[in-house]
Image (cartoon, rainbow, N blue to C red; front, side, top):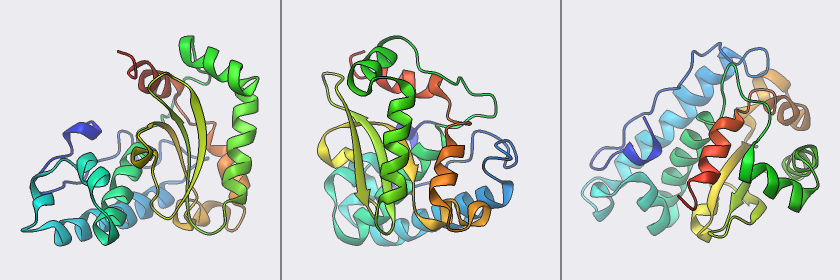
Length: 204
């Protein structure tokens, strides 16, 4: 199921596109059970409570994120962010970007390793809870963006490409307080096929 098909009157849970243990040892089955089944599912459940009998009840999830604020925004954005986050990983990922995205990364960050280092540093140093994103504008220019809490590049009219969840529930079971270590391991299961497709779709 894609993000665009997360539907209207009742926001439904999007299942993981791989088994719970498929990303081990980098992300454990225990972490994914808690992250997906408790935290992400909790945001969806709360959002459905909040939007019942409102104008948001008939909107796709992404539209709710773009047009809401307060508690509805927080729960809608967290639901959307988590789907996007889970869908970027794979048990047998493509380890490097290709084509237009590779050229854009090399041009703006010097190399893929340069991009990884900068995003990892942003994630390790973001105060409190939130998200670190790689996003692109309509011309394909790339941006590394740190957002607190439920923040998302969707509200900046940018296209998200990579999401790093730095809420403690994303990493604490496996890495305790070693947030930077957890982010360094995420790159090992990030599927650049998915990221390439997200980037190529900007001008498609």
